[in-house]
Image (cartoon, rainbow, N blue to C red; front, side):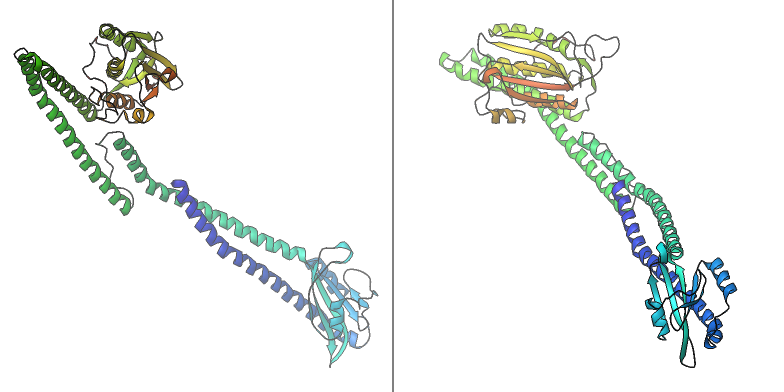
Length: 477
């Protein structure tokens, strides 16, 4: 923005300088040329006055000293010719040459004043000339021509243009300095507002900007931004508190309802047991949804610290924790992890990510199949792959699988919150999560990418001591 403002200031200034400077330079050049013509004409008139009497008497004028002084002082040339056009006095050389064929001399002998520019003699530079008749009583006795090299006037005009250019450069430099200060004063609060907006976009709703700096328009915009951020903070906080409170209040009644259904199950006729079991399953699913809402509410409300964790070690640890569950379903967990791979992740986030992905994979893995858990290095950091051999998902479903409460086109026992939690945790560290088709279009490859992070000194595991936990209660999304 500073560059654009500065370019605008300089463009306007340059345009003004061109509009004013070019006509001024042209006017100066024209004035210098007109002044030169006037000086030459005055000199020619003086010489004509000096030679008038001798030429009227038919004798050669004796003005050698005058011509020599003129040649020395001005580098100009004086030429005096008689009525036939032959030179009778010449400050540049001998006399007797015929100049009757020169247009300006012919015009002067005809009694007219001649002014103009013509090429120089014998390869000399062009000259400006003034030719006047030497006359008295209406009779022309000869002519006087004074020439002056154009190089001198060209040098004076060139010097004038150089002065105008230097002045324009100074003006542009001053405008650039003043414009830079002005642009910075305008853009500084805008940059501060941009930084605050980025913080709000990253979830920091406490970001505010100073409303006392910058132009009035920017100050009003800053005040509006602060009000918007405050209102957004209030709305998001109210929503998070509502979700957390509602989920917390629902946990106890749901637990009591499940216990009562299980107690009733032993007292109902056998043909009613399936209905009771279905009701218990629905209560358990609702409990998982409540647990997921609590997790999301806590993660949305808090800025979870991002730390260095050993993705390979934590993934292997969680595979060990899920091995018994997988064996009970006749499913094999196959970990493929390097010894260590350090990445950035929210504290405790990798464990939740692996638990949710393994829960999803085991929910669809057929008996006798294998769920591969692979950790590999990437150019940006590390990637976790959890690949099942289940029925897979259409591409459209894989794109929508991270939407909250979305459960796919087929019936699923999940809550629709596991994968949104996985993506939320990955993005909190600057990574991301996605679903891809498994090898041979069989199953699903759940991929979580996390950015690289140097290993902390003296620590061989994750960013914080890992607690060995059982499988998460969140089922497949």
